[in-house]
Length: 475
Image (cartoon, rainbow, N blue to C red; front, side, top):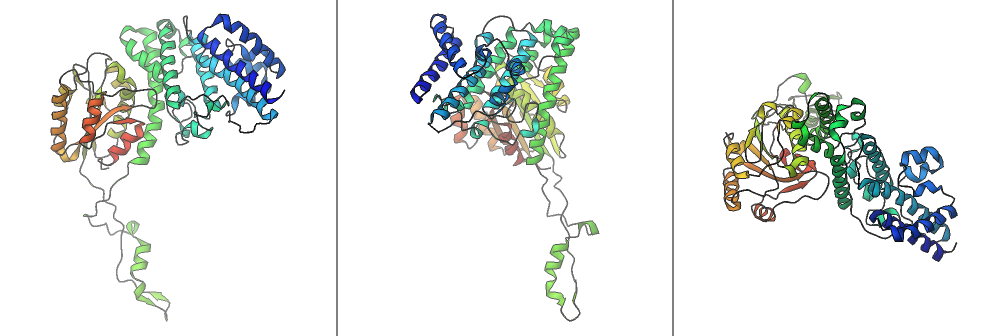
């Protein structure tokens, strides 16, 4: 085949993908037939066109395809017929990945636990194709899948030529990583919503097929009041697994960011283990006697090891309305981690139209999540007034407010109160979302006004909040 013929066949693959995605059955039959011919010409199995077969089953039947599905799909600039043929093959592989992740099988009907588990595996193959860490496209963030050791590998888009480069297929269409994450997150939520979750959770075998994820945890938190017996037991297990998995990653990030501060006002202890040998030698070099080949030491120097003892009070105020679940889960875990640090006094409050003081359970994020009630309105001002009662020394207190800033009362009254807290010397940290997935809306009026005050609303990775708290907390 020459270059023009290959380009025509690639268009067939893409048009067949679009008709399959959007259910254009009349035109789809023609493209389906043409795609079958393309597959035959490339000596690929016809099952590569079947969205009903999982990637895992396909590779089990045709292990020779493992390299196509297990390696990143890297764009090629070569325009030779051989390179164009390879691009056509990549297009068919990527078409299979997209159909399994977003195709008609995900859009209608009741979803079983087995189908959901299989969908997660298929999305895992899509992540591999894009060079993304496991779980990152489902909103768990780099390293927040089953392999948390990869959290520092960066985003997959940069590793595989960028998602703007036609998703690595040579097709030339642009999809950003944020858009892909947002779509997958919404789709996962829809799949879980359509799952007969009550029945699945009652059966230990079916429940064991569920993989903990943010979407699943969100649904479980919404449904927990309606669960009992074995279903509630399995729901708690899944929430606990997700909390433990996420905590492992966040704990490492906190440990890397927060280090103790030396108090130089306290004289060093003059004991041997504190001896600063290098400094002692350097400071006494003028006492070197070349004739005797001896260094006479008239002063010893010691390391300062005393840490500042003043405790930092951290007050975390979390919006528990339905749109804030992702941020609430991550910030609850972060609060528990900071509460475990020496000289950090953490208080945790959750709110909608009412305020709940969860400080007694701050060391146990699992228990905190079980005690929250998602939904309701958003009365931020009332929550801050309640939280302000816990301020003892403003200069030594950090207050973290996690909300979308859509106030149920007066925006101006809330803004004036936040301004007064800042002017008191309090370290006020506004957070719009601590999440690594999807689109998140923050009240633009507050975004602009708080930025003018020098307190821009944080959004994005939990690392941003950790770094901000690092400036305040003394350990």
